[in-house]
Amino acid sequence: MIVVDASALVAVLLDEPEKLQILTILATEEAVLSPIGYWEAHTRIHGLRGGDGVADLDALLTNFGIQVAPATAATAKVAAQAQIDFGKRTPARLNLGDCFAYALAKEGDAPLLYKGDDFGQTDLTPALPA
Image 1: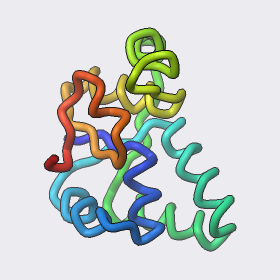
Image 2: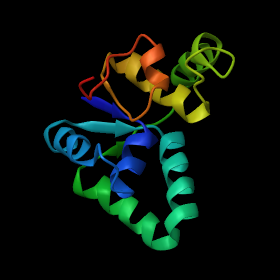
Image 3: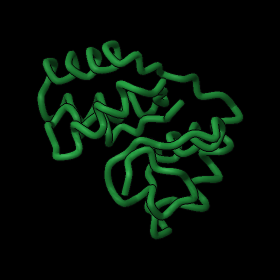
């Protein structure tokens, strides 16, 4: 299992250079996304591409079987600690959605599929090769 951050989904939907690598991983791994990660991807894509972009996001989740995992009280506690350890006042600069992606990955001892440099400052295993 892998955890998917909103940044990876947005990269696919915007045809960014990492798109094929991300799709290859999604095609071979069971994947989960936090509810806040879904909201984050939805908000970003809606702002850039409107309703058609959101339809593409939902199709991407369906086509690759990406499940939105529940955010439990335990998940929230791990995310809160992630904010302390890796939040905006640290080199990682994780935002709220990032902290919940971090928490899911920590809880599941799973690699995180993301785009960008922020999670590289944490103790998570990246799903994309460096």
